[in-house]
Length: 433
Image (cartoon, rainbow, N blue to C red; front, side):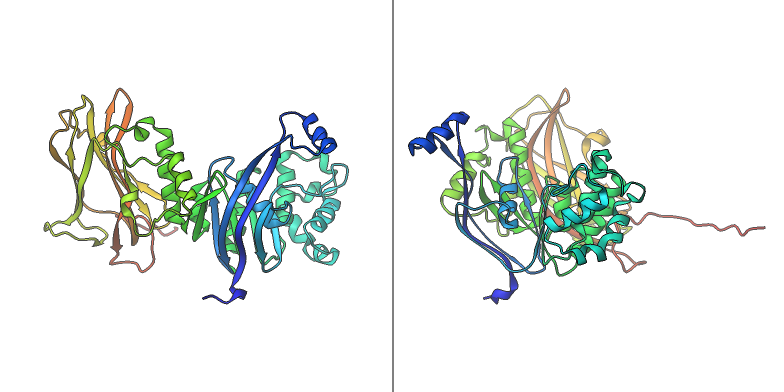
């Protein structure tokens, strides 16, 4: 068991209810009569998790899932209804940019006021003042009144202030939604630096790519309950499966598919007190309408030997075999996707691009072959998805989708470091005359 000092944040049966009134006068009548005139909305229900020192954890979920409510409670700006929260260390929260700023005061004066609202002393602000202004890039405007700033400039100043504290625990809630591209890139670099330090970071974003970039673990919230709490890559894949099924009605239908995962399933799962088992459940990431299914996915070298550790530049062939169960007068396609180890999509070879397709009964077996000669992937580990789909008049239907359940390892005969592409190249040099 871990020593208590290793735990930065611990939430135990944490719950939060809000009182919902149909009209403002109901609140007055409730105060006067002592009788209940409201309904309770439980934004969080029995939240349990631990965050160790130095960990970076992402929180994902749809709007209304309870993400911001959770962060506000952890930051101390919102009271809980029940349960316990233990915080071990100094907390800095970037929740609402511009907290403590006054429109009539200058940017410099607002740095003092905002910094004190964030718990910084005047001496701390004095020491950080030049660094904050430099990071914001607002030298010319720092002594102008805050109300003359554009929304992007206001975001830059308030984020610059918040990011230059030195907390033990940093809580970030979608703070990068404002600001220009150059400043956002600067913020991302700063956040990456913080994440690589001993600071504990709790990060909320709708961008699963950003969660994958920064976080080693993730929590998926749904209707105020934790559905999954695991390695970031697994939680993101599970959440993307849910989004895909919610976006395509045929994936939620009962036609040949008893494995669809909808909101009802999530609620039933949490009512039983359980989380999704993701580490030992690869079949969870194999889903689709199932009118045809993938029966085999293998990788072969130029001698026909099955291999999953290869050299860049080799000839390889990917075999995707399937079996059909139902007839459709649609074009049948096969495809695979190749991802880096941190979830970046490299490319998607598919039969649509190559003009290879079948238009026939699905009541039979078949195979798609993807030939790479040579394979130009650079050194590193990669994850692969495989799927078969149908297309008709621009409409697509996933039959079976295996989301990043396969992997390969590529080695280079030239380089020792990891990279994505090893492309043939000739280099010439012309000396100056």
